[in-house]
Image (cartoon, rainbow, N blue to C red; front, side):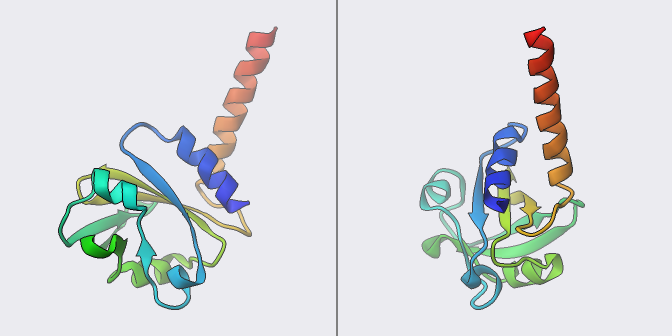
Length: 136
């Protein structure tokens, strides 16, 4: 599933910053367009006041979103990111904090492979090859 692949990718990310994975639900991508951020992540890594947070996609494009600290989530701007990237229910999204107010975002589709899946396959192949070499 997209979530399984996202968790695998998250474990192999460079240690640039903390991350979390969200499985897209209706409230995230169809109606409401609200993305709650895990409470513990907010408390440990995000500002205690409302700020603009940039979501950087896999192509390096930045999208401004409104982080609402009291509600622990992304609001304004999230809708535009969803539409621009065609996010759907069942897709998994990795958010890696790479700056005080900047996330690098990786999208794994429920029903098709993406550019993130390519490096994942290579990482898995690399690990498999290491195991074969060590086993010889």
